[in-house]
Length: 316
Image 1: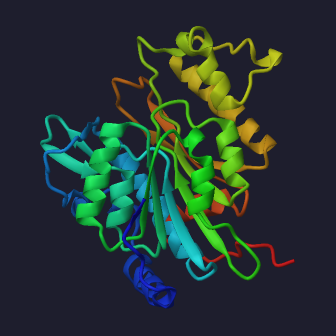
Image 2: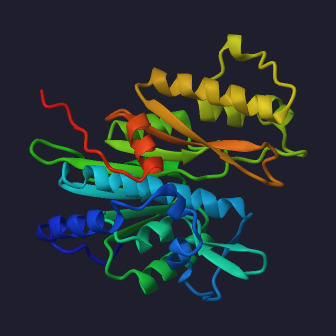
Image 3: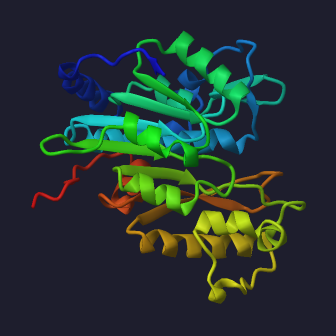
């Protein structure tokens, strides 16, 4: 459903100018500074559902924010439309403890930023979470052009293609899609189908990997989840040689990167520290995945705080 409309396209250039003016000299350390990030804590407890999170999740959201800043600043003057997609929007808010420290999830964070996105497409499978998300977007972001889709990403591909404009002759579109599922998702086939429609992706590779649901689970009882995420498991991948969660994660990253490359996607990753009771490894990786430009250049840009211009589209 549509929830409001974006200003006319002729206003986009001024929005882009204001964006670059505001963010061009911000350094990565600023994004991790609580004072700089205080604007992300402006949404109050409204009595609706809030997702309980561990402290490292806040840093994950901030890192995704840096990627969005770099993506929009780099591409705003090269395209006619910038579209943001969140495949796992949840209810929009996280909290630490019993709603004592509420901060925005990825979708609310993106909506709060003064970024030149022309459309926001937010997906959520759970009906109760979706209801909370709908109420919040209606209440706080009536001036944004928002599409809410209730369902699994794998079941929403047709609707995503309908609501996200495809690039055509003399009309360029850049789509950045965040897939923060905290699970082995989305499947490789979903990434492939959305890539063909012009999507690029930000994916924190985080999922349950602790003492109960450990590497042995994914190589045994949960092997079908692993197969869905990777597309398939070949005979040569039957022996993972994993004797710990950390080694399993390392091998998973290696195989996943190869699979992405096999469908024409390049992946660049940033390693982040974590202290989690649900994912008991010392670090995790956040991926920038694309087939349209240099993933490494854009991700380096996100860390550096500068925004060098490079050509997005093949001029031939």
